[in-house]
Image 1 (cartoon, rainbow, N blue to C red):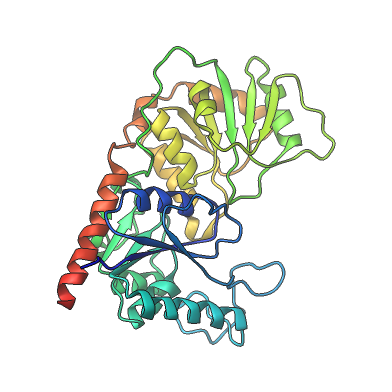
Image 2: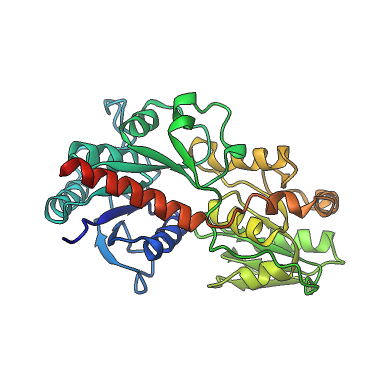
Length: 353
């Protein structure tokens, strides 16, 4: 008898949701279908089947709001009269009826979590960092069989209700079990990383920072708005790279946002970290950055610093003990996560027998 599949819903923001879904799919002992708005991602090497859903965003300059003052309080996004949303949910419903999944992992969407529950499918809902105590989040958490957090309990929000914590499995920062580089190849450079989910950097800011700390070479990964600025000799812009690990390994310290991908990569390599959180809903990156700073794992700064502040920030970062952030990267996260998903899927199948 074939085992029923697991669905994994992937949020469209950034690349981190997709990357961890692929890592988990490769490790899972049953078929997994990756679901979501996937048009902006390279899915050619997907480890399993794909269910591409129509984009649910409405109008130009989409800001995550649906413009409805009468939206039910248990939902974040439910626009009226949107054919693309109707087609999206219809396609998901048809897949559920046809595939009969044992479980759907929701990473992340309140609406998908509640819709799966309405379709009588058990869910394992991923929790992101930040203050998520609003009614829609709490109802999605309540509807799930189990909650999954890709961060350690040490950086959970102090506002998280006790029952939510008790329902959460803290898998830890999700990395590909990279071993921290302790070789003498660190070249003393500063690495700045911009992820796909943010606005990127400005050459004027980067040039001013590099000029203010002239004794270090600055390397930059990710999108940068050059705008005609000539880079100083110690500033090197590489653009988007498929594998940032070699650049991280060589750096003395890393500067980046508070997204899961950057924080996980820095922790896995055990690198000193300056966290400049990007604006996200529910203060996801700000809270994570402050928590890292409180435990001595990073230097926190709310926004891109003025040029004159950089020498002091770099000096403070160099005084950090990299073992603190390195200690947050626990081996076996992928194996633990896939085992939890398999356990929940097995439990759901047992209930149907």
